[in-house]
Image (cartoon, rainbow, N blue to C red; front, side, top):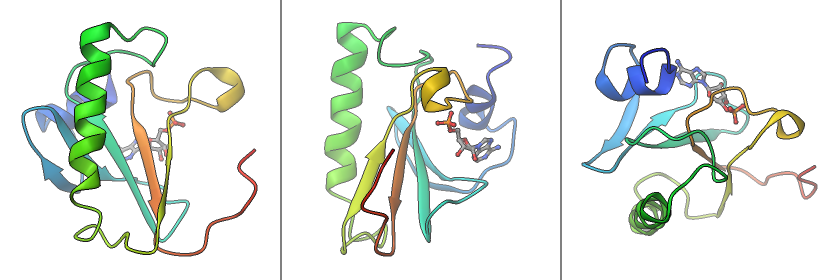
Length: 113
Ligand code: AMP
C-alpha cells in the first residue's frame, strides 16, 4: 500500500530500528515505547487487521508468532511478554497494517483495558 507507514518501513523507505527480518516479517522497535521492551511484529503482507485477514494470511501470522517464540531469549523476554494486536477505534488502532505489539522487559500492569 502506497501510503502505509509500515509498508514504507518494511521497504526501507522510512528509517526504523529493525531487530529481526525474514521473508515473512520484520520486527522493529516501537518509536514510542510503552514498556522497557516494546517491539512491533509487522507481517510483510499488507492487510489492515484480523477481520480483513484471509486464511492464508492467518497461516502467515501463525508462522510469524511461532518464529517469535524461538527468539524470545535473544529479545530479552525471558521474564515473560504480552502480545497485543489492536483493531479499530475502540482499541485505538492508529496504523491500518496488521501488527502485533510485543511488550516486556519489566512487570507489566495486571489490568489490560
Ligand atoms: P496501534 O496504535 O496499535 O496502531 O500501534 C501503532 C504503533 O506504531 C504505535 O505504538 C506507534 O508508536 C508505532 N509507530 C508509529 N510510527 C512508527 C515508526 N515510524 N516507527 C516505529 N513505530 C512506529
